Amino acid sequence: MEIKEYLNKYGLIGVISDYEISLDKNKLVKDLDIKNRDKAFKMVNLDNSILDKEIKELSLDNLLKIDLLTKIDKEIIIVGNLSKCLNKKDLEYLKKLFLKLVNNYHKKIVVIDNDINVFFDLVKIVLVLKDKQIVYETNNFYDDKLYQYCKMPKIVEFIKYINRDNKRLEEVTDIYELIKDIYRSVS
Image (cartoon, rainbow, N blue to C red; front, side, top):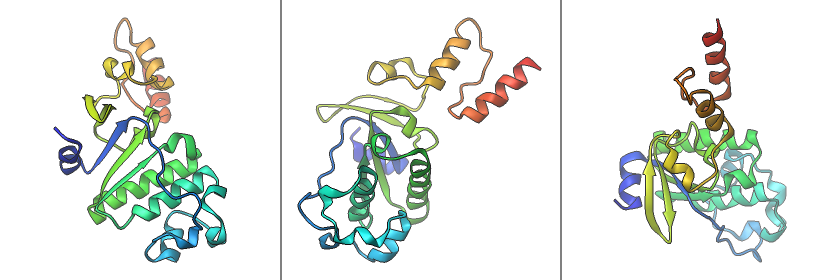
């Protein structure tokens, strides 16, 4: 299957690969083609004070948000490197925004990152791309073959370690669910 077919089926997919923002870094933010700029800035928690800055002067989180806003009116939105650019609060906010865009506005979103944690509570399928070809796909964050292509998150590593002999804990991706499960298993 091609990525477009996955997008049609799932609406929101995760891709393990490298991503580079393609904005012209010598332009000013106000020169970018962003529809309904004030509403768009508010949607991603950006301040209008950055309008007169050059793109190369922006912080990584603002650069990622501006990159997203230039694509927000398109049917297919491709964003990446969320783990390198955003703090936990901004990442959780953008995850909710992506889900809303997919569910309410029927957008199709590709999130590209090398950190699996970004995909937790966001995507239903993860694809691995090498040389623009899909080399692996999975819908299970506990799939051992997935971690041949990227680093295993600590929570997955911990649960796999505990469950190595027999299954004691549920395979969860949320730390609070893990804590509840540990509490249930010892009481």
